[in-house]
Image 1 (cartoon, helix red, strand yellow):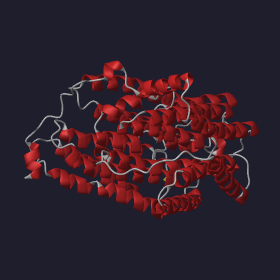
Image 2 (spheres, rainbow, N blue to C red):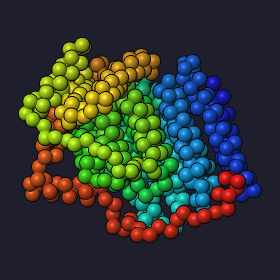
Image 3 (cartoon, rainbow, N blue to C red):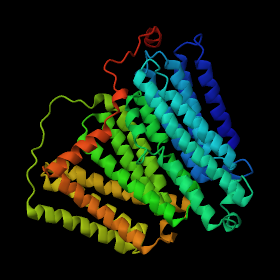
Image 4 (tube, rainbow, N blue to C red):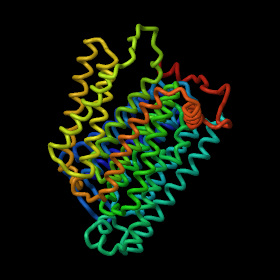
Length: 499
């Protein structure tokens, strides 16, 4: 099955290179689009058939096949959307070639057993993303943004490369399967494990745009929508995949606490930016920062199955939001008047949240991620109850909303129950965490929810300063603001494709 997948990828890459030639008709893009289905099908077949194998070069695991299928599906959807969206762009053909090559190499990254080849593929995918950013060289702001992103990506790649060298020096092997085996882990000292784990944390948080490296993602809002879609759906979440792959090694408590703290701050920053900015793409960028923070919180607590589910669902959901970014402005419609909630309605929100959290936790009471999941679920239920009931939505919308929440919760639990044993990952309940770490996590989440609700209703001077600070964090640098873009440029290819 691996040979079939590699053949499908090679066919797509060759097709993309053929499309670069100006002698090839612009309508060939539809043929290329059809070929993109083949890698997705091959990865899905390998995933469902349980085709796993480990050699000195390949590590074909179910996690690797799942990520490969996810990346290729997103790539196919993005390129189908780009056929019309990018029509008329001067670099029309180059976009499809770079989409194909970048996602192909990205999918191979997680099928490698040799950590040197994994680092090489990761570096090539970073370069491919930078080339996608820089296709519009006529924009001065894009040039500056690419330089800043290149610096961040280089730091991430160097961090991973140094971690790979430390692994080699410790276990005397470049094979990931050897390094993560019981024998390999036994050769790890506490100091080497801590150093490698901190390097993995740095590698993961940069592409995930976590604080203090979130600015490159804020600046990337200027790139075309298809590039944003593939970046937010299949690139920023690779940190979760990386930590999941190296989960047997990622056991240093200081590194995990550091990751949790960084992700927690990023959640607050992303949520705050999303609430104060009004333009759609910047809200999506802020949402991605917050969502990646939640994913890395799950990784820090050892809930790798939940993190994998999160990154896949977030990828499909966020790409669909970017695709509809051109139609978010609607004609004026009637809006529902929101009334001021009473004390009893607020108590009902608290009661619903507590009941849901206790009910979820008492099914299988255990400290650690189960307790934190109960708090998250309780907060989500309380927020949903507030939006659906306290704000007095129409009965038709109320029933639909409650039904959607119920179906979503049941679907998540079903997917989690299926993937947990299927992906052969360690369950979160098997991870031993310090009691203080768990208590601080729960208190942080609870206080965050209370603080967000309190700030939402404040008009003090301090709140105004906080509001303006969040506005500043979500704004691009002044040297990245372009008053009048010099693109797109019309080309005869529009008439070729339409005619």
